[in-house]
Length: 373
Ligand code: NAP
Image (cartoon, rainbow, N blue to C red; front, top):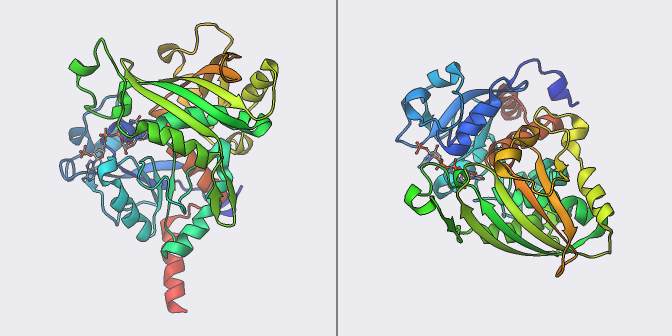
């Protein structure tokens, strides 16, 4: 446990940017009763700013938001906000410059959006897989002249499930090639998302920009950090991305070609025993099993399996030999929890545990002391 955490009986105050959207709502629901973080500020567009959250939001989740959050007045997504860090679920059309502005103003920015994921000096992190990439924060600050602020990102919702399943295979056997077909839920498109007349009774074989993300992000996540830069994994990924008529939970059919030969039992063992820093550190949102391997021949299924590990576990099933590659399997990831809101919160917990999430008053005291010196 870090000093900052050990000395901290108070909670960190989180600001949520994009608080009214699909992912922002999920963040608010996941943070209800969180042991370390409390929701202190909400930011969204001019359409919502100035309104209490309860009237600004079109709530789409089961249950309701905590009454105290309903009373918070939504602000414009501009610094300063009264919080220690921000979780960003902003529309990708506006996230880039807004997130940079917060980082420049001294806020740790933990983002879901695509805008900064592939920047050379920005960590793209799944805590179980590449927690060490957070060391890039130092390079980023030096390069960009940020003082206490920084940008950390989590991957695209389909990438999270894929990279988590590939990580133990890459470590144990090396992964040479991946062929993946995704069947992605409607909630992945935000609200109001895909019109009902387009998606009911239908499959749409195109999601703008998605295949490029699924093909490149895993290579950065599974890459090695060395000398202040990530050397990408050399694996090749080919993706077909489809939108299907499912509310939550992205299903992916995956074939992999390995670099070293492995038996079916070894592949199953590598997947089912996979764990990382969140499990070691017992972070509040960490599932006991980041990958749950099912033996049932007709699972995983989105309606039945998306809530495994409170939506934080990736469920893998139907592991079997592949006639073209080496092995094939089906995986399921809850797109708004492990694929978005829960991923960002787990990153924040890891940053807090590492001592990279100072309370804002300490930051201000430090800056004042530096100015006096
Ligand atoms: P969404 O439902 O469309 O919500 C977008 C949010 O951005 C809303 O709170 C909206 O506020 C706010 N916003 C829009 N324009 C703004 C502006 N000019 N200034 C400030 N705020 C503005 O989208 P979402 O599905 O939650 O996705 C949020 C981000 O996460 C996107 O970048 C998306 O690509 C990424 N992501 C989503 C998923 C998923 O499963 N949905 C998964 C991974 C990553 P108003 O309500 O005031 O308009």
